[in-house]
Length: 195
Image (tube, rainbow, N blue to C red; front, side, top):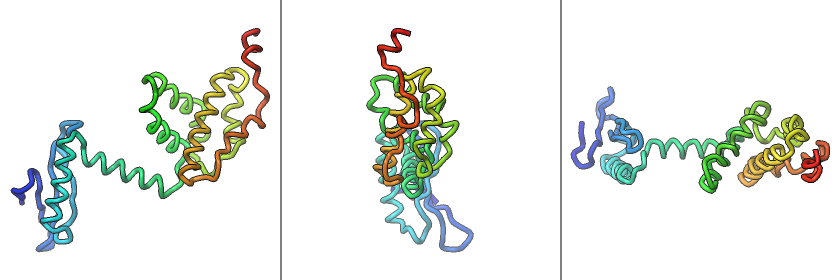
């Protein structure tokens, strides 16, 4: 049954008499595809509340925001905050947060791709609370002396991820800061130029 007050607001009756589901049918401003957004069950959600929710969603749609994508993103953020993330989940969140500040797309891609190549295969699926200095040292060791510049950048990126984890209460402190103690001394820039 269509509610004539808000464009696309429907009440779909359920099998139990006097009950149903409120649905807002709209076209996504991002994909131009038809979407159905649940607004709650009737009679728990009154027609007045359904209209209010539909109006709020319509306002977002007119502003170019897909309310279903926004809801999904909020649920993902909430689930990430209620459980300990894996290193890859945390790194991707940090990258998403930082990417707006990067000067160009190439730098943004490099930031995450170095972690994808060197760290995710070993540590990506492990909860951040289980990671220690030795774990990061094992990822850096193969390139520590061969590619010292790259290794240092990867170490900084891992530290940024673990600092974010500490700031969000998933760990007490970043274990990456002491990784140098487990690896050989890198050649100085002057020594690298000589070779």
